[in-house]
Length: 98
View (cartoon, rainbow, N blue to C red):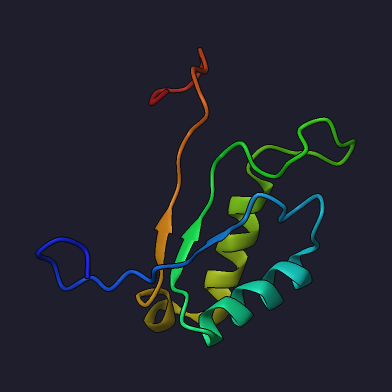
């Protein structure tokens, strides 16, 4: 569990930084399913992903969009079983939060 809460967080975390450039959405879905089938409910992402940032097909936020598509596919009940961590990489002048 997390602290004194009842939230259960797996010891392993699935990193998603390759979703969108090195992995297709279907590859990503398969990796998430595999992780979940093996007890991992903790998923890490960021608005900067995917990597590498220099890839011609790079588009910031693509990884989070793939994760969102996965969540729409599994539905809200199964979504509640996931712990999702996200972050931002730095200062963006036009961002209201960064």
